[in-house]
Image (cartoon, rainbow over all chains, first blue to last red; front, top):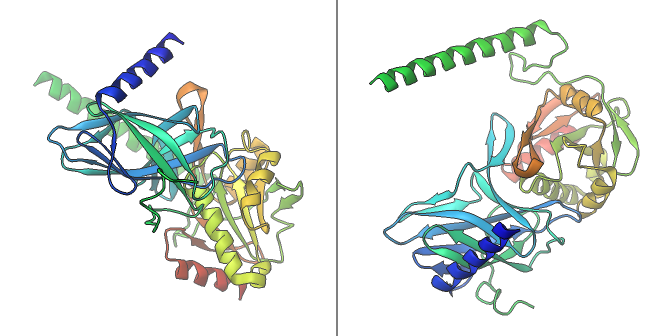
Length: 169
Length: 202
């Protein structure tokens, strides 16, 4: 319990130290870190998990690492490797934080994913939910996931791209 | 230098152990006629009895499936990517085929019967084409169906006593006699998948 509180306090502090500004459209920015189109997938009723995907760009001169993810749809969010090898669908927790090297864009959704464990509700297409990504250097970044269709495999460019998050019904 | 030498030695020992292990596995497999193994042509040696229960409580077995071609794939509800997208895409393909999709059965076989209860599967499957049947069984029945399809499922422990499953991907296309025809991969272009589907229904 004490540790949890301490983590929360640290997150809050990091949040104030690294003020998050929303970049254009469905992108988020904090320091040298830019997060492009975080999206999730509509879930079947009762689904015990949901996925999270995005691209993270490091435009600064210093390498950073994604340490943790929290969201308001589940108590736990985990970073997993998820690969198809030898005809087997394989999934396992990442051994450590995700490296975001300088000048590079790291895609979450290509050989890995964020897994929201026991989402509190069924996710429906078009909805959004809040999450916080915590980076070693850039600190906490508040983002919004957009829920895409159940068959989605990639981020979809939608015409209402600029409005969701701010004016979501 | 000494450390490096020791490391090299350890690495070679590891290689030797793995090689011996692999050789033993191959030998054991070929000596056991019951163990499914890929044949020379690359076609998995699929076959063998299985019996499971659907999300609606019906018993579905290799025998009850005779007379109609069918599609079968392995999955579980604690799978965020490939399982729901496969179910969704199969539903869309079935919608496109319309009544022609009545000519075959589609089965999702749970590799995680501990967590995939009949109730959960019943709820989960309401998001997809109602003609898709979600099957589960006891651990023994699940092992039997995996063996029947020459497939594998491995439990991977995770933090906090949780676990996930690694499993054979791809959709098995079976003919009306229960004979393996082809494997449909969801990464393939949709036209190719539709072609394979039409192949087993024509």
